[in-house]
Image 1 (cartoon, rainbow, N blue to C red):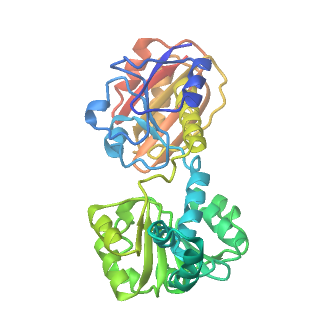
Image 2: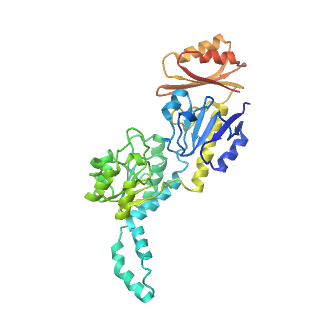
Image 3: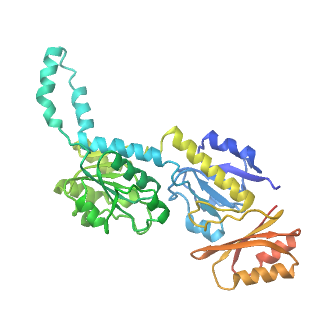
Length: 395
């Protein structure tokens, strides 16, 4: 079996890297031409897409640090690990709900600034007199609006139900699989505007794609009424100037986010209605280990078998191995490609034991198990077919 070189471009948990030694892959940090790359938040560019690169595996959900379009054009599979950090984010959302509802930070700051009071008999009445300034509200009975009901959003919705909150959710791309994971108490609403108008607390769990960038703007926020907004998704989905205006106009009571910006930091230092965290949503040892394990497993499985799961640019595929020689072919999704590939295999006198073809958008991917041996001339012949992007032999 061939040995595939894997290189890390970010710090990856050893718990994941240790799995590489159990495969037909090898960790080679000095390689200038790896077959696979493991990455977290490191920004990648065209210079990272070497000639032999077959796949990039992101130990995390977001892939806006990877040039997806360029990878697709070159037939490089990009994986992510949705759900591996979902519990870590869910727990931080719980903390954010408490911070936004109970004036926790301002209460702590108030007490920490009482250094001038040295006697307990003075401190107790002073606290009793001033604690009313920090009166909050309970989460129980309040309405939690969850925008995006994927791996993280569904966990957050379930948490809301467990907290005796009324939970409403909005996700136009909700899959049947994701829907089954939702508690029956979660009410689906028909529009994001309705969700904003009905919710006391709103939490965002949507990807930063073209259709969602800046989706939370002043027009949408005008539907809210003294709501708390939480953003633990991506900073691009929120228009920050609109947030500041919504806070001033009473549409929002406060804003808690994992994505600080200079303008938000200025507001946080002046007023207590903005709470900022330094992008720590997935920063737990458990989440980092889980993401690393999944990222390594997906990458090594693809290099060894050609099977694909959790790719953001390629279709999913799982073909059980039936022969020693397997050919993986990526091509443009245009008519008559399967026929051309099958005809060429026939001309090369290569017998097909099993074959499957899947597509996603403008891209198609084929796995073909061959009964007899495959030489370099055959691979070159297949590569020469018009609209073929790449061909590789998996032995």
